[in-house]
Amino acid sequence: MRLQVIILVAIACSVAHAAASLQSSYEYAISMDEKGNYFMYWTTNDTTQMIDIAISVKTTGWVGFGFSPYTGRMPGSDTVIGWVSNGKAYLQDRFATSHSTPALDTSQDYTLISGEETNGKTILKFKRKYNTGDSKDLPIEAGTSRLIWSYHDTDPVSSDSFTKHQIQGSRSVNIFNTIPQADKPPLPNDVVSFNITNSNVLVPTKDTVYWCSSFKLPVINDTAHIIK
Image (cartoon, rainbow, N blue to C red; front, side, top):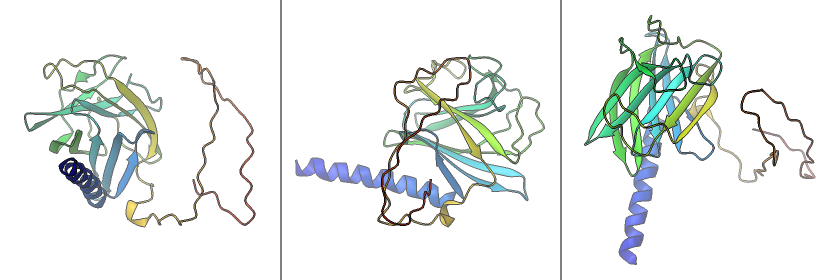
């Protein structure tokens, strides 16, 4: 039992160290999903017009990341798919025209920096220009970017044969005007958190729906500030 505890503590420490290392190496960070299984880190350089990106995903299979044209969907998106196999990292610049495996781009404009699998996570680091000049790539511009992400728990069958993603999603992110991690103040110890959710709502698969509800907030007998 003592040996098991020591091993678990060692694994937990190494996972925390990897996350802390990424946060200190990049200017911005965000969780792409609610469970915290997919993290994106990035730094922009207006002088070189380059963006450096790292993704850390709780899987040992392939991972996908991309820019979507305002819709948060695959068609028209500029994507990369990457994985690590036998210690070697792979990254492919692709583009999607439908809800199927994105086609391989003849112009590979994403540069792989490094990749590794550690403690059940795949970490890929890569970079690209804001505007690659490739018609299959979407330029990264000021304002809100629609990012898409996905992953699977196994590596591709081959470099051009992928099993459909098991988990996928999208997120709106302001690439250039997000508060840097180093500038975010720590939350005070007396912060009270609560969730506001609509239960048992059937969301249509095609139409956009705005579902409005009223909620009673907790009673706080003092001055309070909503911070998120």
